Image 1 (tube, rainbow, N blue to C red):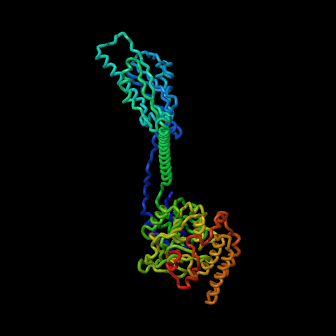
Image 2: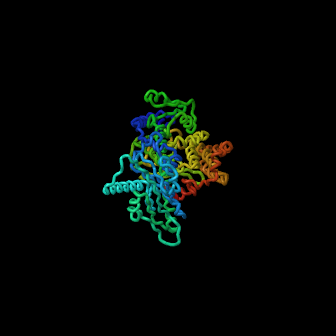
Image 3: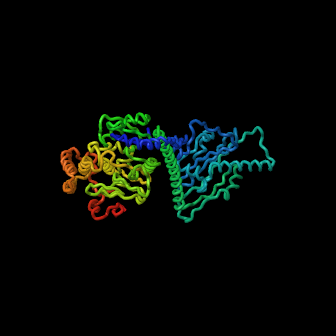
Length: 602
């Protein structure tokens, strides 16, 4: 696919092709294809985990790799099994943590005071039974095990190991020793755990610090099998509420991390999708030049084949007009942007790059045009450059359907003094040099071939604006247009097409409410023009106006609004940007002959 295709519609314009094709051909040929800078984003393996599975693993704390086997547990001198319920309790006598301290290859010794939970089961089965991993347990044990005063599993192990070491030290100092044949017994001890409790006695929450109250006593009694009962901790409802809020914060933190993971995953997938789209839009060439010959008979085709055989040439069997010819030509072209360019246009450096860059940076803009100046026999004098009649620096329209331009009001054209060099949204773009997105061209069905020539670009832009697109003039891009290369400005046939097509365009695009009244008033104004032609002796122009009205009435039934236009028929005409609320003809005769005099667009 080509990024932009510049299409010239030729009809008996050999002289214009000889004059302007060489410069255009060299400028487009000099443009090289710019490789697309496409960032490659790879999805990390960790992000391939389904969201539901990852969330479950995150909450339960059992996230393990399916391919990696768990590491074998290393032998330890002390093994501790803790079965802890973290909820507040009103029965402290049931809040018992069973722990088993043993050495390798030792047998458990059952305590004289059996525990409610652990003492009735063998040690081997207790060691193989995993601790319950509820949602709350993970929050306290993995995220922050000490903020409520509970000893974590690692702390219990360390404390038991330290007690064992102290016990051995005291035995060695006392001169006692165990027989080599005696087998050590496992010691099972029970102790109460600090838990939140509801009480009306104290108003302040208290926490038990085992390191200060029972550390030495409990470790000293391990040797004799006695147990030191720690103090009961009494807490009020305020601390229980604090614990509940902490749990909710931890849960919210986990959910936030999972949402962040999901968003990062979606961002990576979107980046890869965009990369694939860019790769699919890799252009075979940046720009191409196409000449569509509309059945010319002056030797244009022979000259092109002889002098520029590598220019793509599309030949038609007859003249299909401006609208029909472009429709047929663009059906055979695959490009992202279509550029309609008259054969009598001289381009300037960078004009096409400027138009393409504007459309790529303004997504709502579907159509744009350069500043069109009048060609003065190939000479360029900035001080004397004047705007060209057909388009100037962007087209507008008044409430009665009369078109005018920024830089040209009716027949008065202004000198270009850089007064209109800012980009501006307009109502229509000139078909002499117009750049349009190919997607929008296809969406609108191209130009209306029934117009044949003249007013078809205004109708096209009007339909685009009804569909929500924008039309812009980009003065930074500049071209020079001869004008009247196909039909002279005073041609009766050209006048006929302008009057007829203008009425057809109004009937086609105006909302039904008030349309008939406006068209009737417009035909009265046309009649006044015809009277002036008759009184000044230009009877051919007079007859052209009358024929235009006659043919409009005959063609009118064929121009009923299409179903797509009916959807937007409720949009008032004067609400579209670029429509003058008054009459441009009246403003002209009142002396406001410059676009800058129309305060509505300033």
